[in-house]
Amino acid sequence: MRRLRPEQDAFGRVLLEHLDGNDRAATIVERDDGYIEWEPPAAYFSPFTNWFAVERRALRYVRGRVLDVGAGAGRVALELQQRGHTVVAVDVSPLVVRVARRRGVRNAKVLALEDLDGSPTRTLDAPERCEAAAGS
Image (tube, rainbow, N blue to C red):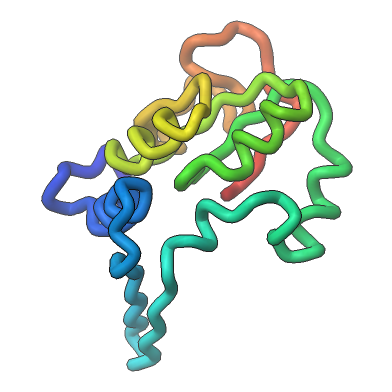
C-alpha cells in the first residue's frame, strides 16, 4: 500500500482527534465475516507500564537501531527512544506520522514498507542497517 490520502485516513483521523482531546473518538473494525468491534484510541497512547506483558517482554530483546513499521501513535518508538535506541518510525498514514511527531518521535516518515531501500531493515536515509524491526 502506498501513502494514504487524507480522505482515506480514518485511523489517522481518530488518533489525531484523540491527541487533540476528543475523548469520543473511537476505532471501529468490521471484518468480512461480520464481526464488529470498537476500541478507544487510548490504547495506542498508553504508557509502557500499561502494555500487555508480552509486549513489555519483547522489548528486552531489542538491540541497536530500530525500524518501527506501522508506527501508529508512536508508543513503541517513544519507549525505545527513551531507552537510548535510534528509531526510524514509518507508517503509510500521514496523519498518524503527524501524531507520532507531535508526541516526540524524532524520526517518523510517511513510507510504505515496500518503498524501503534494499531490505526491510534498511531505511531510505541511513546507509547503516537497523538491527531490529518492530511492528507497532
